[in-house]
Image (tube, helix red, strand yellow):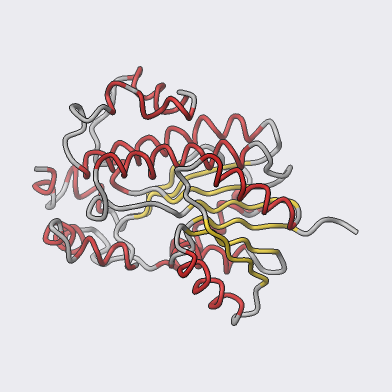
Length: 279
């Protein structure tokens, strides 16, 4: 009898759940959140929809906790899907926390799960359109974000507190780093016959997005929605459908990519009517 297939969801918010619904049918789903209450609530929703779900807790910025989560997933079966949707927003955290969770934590998850992902497996990292707001970085900084050993990542000089202006700048750097890290990790995952990609959503209506819309940058966010070519915010199901494509057989030729799914906000940000948001 073959081992059960395991889908790991780190950060089972609305987007994480939307992806899990599409790729988790007939599989064991391990949901992990920093909050036990959040993980249990998400698990209850999916269990009541007919899925086999196991809630757990994890601090994605702790190597010991991420490694323990890997071991728990392996105890359930063969890890074939990894969905990394955990993180903090610039309105929720300091620059230091944003870099520790969104940059270092993502690199840690990619490293730990990339060491055990099954042949034919796939992963997706939920990043952000904010990574596309940052002007081009020097090539040495690109390589450093992509290739610096995980436990030395936060020691990079250009990530020092005197170099990172505020939490939004930290978030942009973290999300640019996510895309670069996914490119580098795709090479390593490929040696195991597995793939990994990133998705950079625009404004998708979730509790985190609502925090931003009602936070200090809310006016800018509303201008981005109104000035985008599509003219609306997105839904978790739209990101879920894209992730399912990337993780499934139809996306089998895609690895190391960062897919921008933002209603054209970034296009309008650089070349359209919402360019003033850059300031």
